[in-house]
Length: 439
Image 1: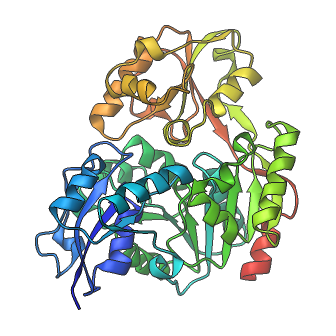
Image 2 (image 1 turned 90 degrees about the vertical axis):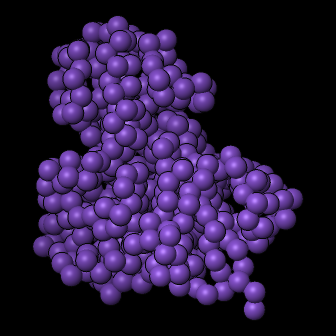
């Protein structure tokens, strides 16, 4: 049988996982290359031999996705595997059409081909879109496990934006580990809240090896999903978070709709701040595609550390980057906090943005009065810092999960926005854990 040539489209996450689980030792296929999108500075690299395995002694090159058609023709590719998340269904099918017209097959790997099984019970927290509220949901579950005295580890969806050879398996126990692994803002946002709670957290590139390490110290595995991707481990309890500010997205984005159809329980977050008609419509949409799922409503109450610094002041607001960019939201917790604490004015930061932050406004036209906290590397973090400092305001509202004051020199007083999950309707999370995991 002829070995089929494969190209994997990705963004430094699901693509590497699909390769590791399905293709790495599969003699029927030869992965010729990856393409990269969404995340800057990950193309024009190479998936290293230490991860690629014996069949790939030179590793596997990574090219920009913009070269997709050329690569299919140059390498006579037989199969293109779409392997990234939070993408509109129409976009996925446009890519499929482009690939089919170029002569290759178009694949999406299903759960059977990409899932790993754990020896321990697995709770997975995923979403239908980026920015629905996965992080606070995961933290809430971890707090419950702590209270019950259950040993657990959090395994976070991959964000390997640096040297892949050094990121095969990463374990974070202290804040010093964030510097040890040269973490970006996006990584710090997800890891730091767990570290501060004393939650063991793993991430990296090879999720088979990561799982083996986590199982040694855990009785339960908590999968902390990224974007709206599917879990990498077969869950015993699959919780999916949905957003009433983006009604209809739960059935029009990939693979968020698949997550929704697989869910044991769906949490409608932001139920107190979204219009009630949106919450009711979202509930109806969930019922249509997953009539057996438990539906809960939740809020994420907002607090800030120094309210007096922003009350009746002109402020610049820094929101979670992915939520605003490929998540498509025009505001986040920072805007909600600004209204709650009665700021005088939210300053439009666009004219003061520099470098890649300025480029982000050109690309994501729905953004106006907030700054997306993009920090995929030292250069971009410096551009973010300069953009914030150039903007004339009395104070800064930091609504990112990580406190930017810790590693940026900001020239204005700043407040930190925090938010945690609170179930306001439906069964408690403790009830779900008892039902599905008997804990």
